[in-house]
Length: 389
Image 1: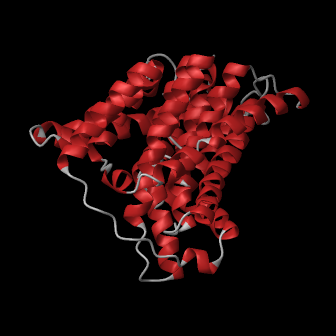
Image 2: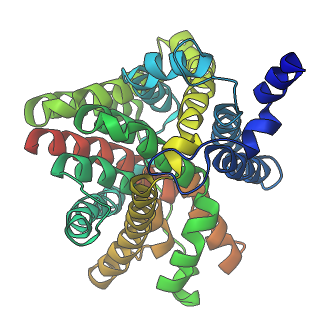
């Protein structure tokens, strides 16, 4: 009978109902794990059924599911998720390799063809510094929050909608918040099709959404080769702390555009980034365990991250509307939302809303100009925060 009792206590079903309540957790641990498993199943549904960035959402959801199975010990020392997190996230290796792959997949031609779109990428970064101020403000008034300046800066980078940059900066400034920040950044990136459209519709009129933009000029291969080299040199001279991110992004792009390293570019943009995406998703999901997730500070980070992301979307749209006041060739404000650096998710959303307003309106390449500018902008913003703090 005693042996049977011991076996029963080791089952997940028993631990769901008869577990203690750790300090700071809203629920008994078992019930909290059950809640998080339901959350992960919802994320999995959104990724598979609704196709909301499944390459991100499915691995994150599975990682969270594995992290919340009672008794599995996947996230403690000796567990697979523990070692994946320590190797790839805590060291910053996965974000930098992801940036290498993103660079190899990115065409900076749309931005070079219409440099004005770079301003939209810059405008979306206002959210980062606005959230930094907001986080410090809230920490003064919320009794459960005690956010330092370094922690506020790490949280604020979520506004750039750039998962690798968020992980990189959090690892430098607030490693204790790295898990929650990674979860927030990648979850919001994956949920862009749900988050951005209401904001875009609220800030634009039907007439504005129907604006057709002029045809982009052709960008020469020489320009495309010189661009990553120039950006690396300027970054090294003025914001060297951003060089790890910018350097890997531009290396990947140079492999793509040089015309002599096709094999390396294909590896970076396919096998390497796919492997890193799987491992990074599982690692991020491992920080969705109930004892780490269902606590006040984590929920505050999720709230601030959501506000930052919404502010970044709105800032780009408002900047586009402002530019139209002074510009002869009008910009469709929808592409301003693509100033956040989630490539190419944000650009696709801009294009889809433009198509809703007018099926003959093709905004994808214009939106990509703002999108790739946002990727550079968020990395530079991270370098600036590192330099200041």
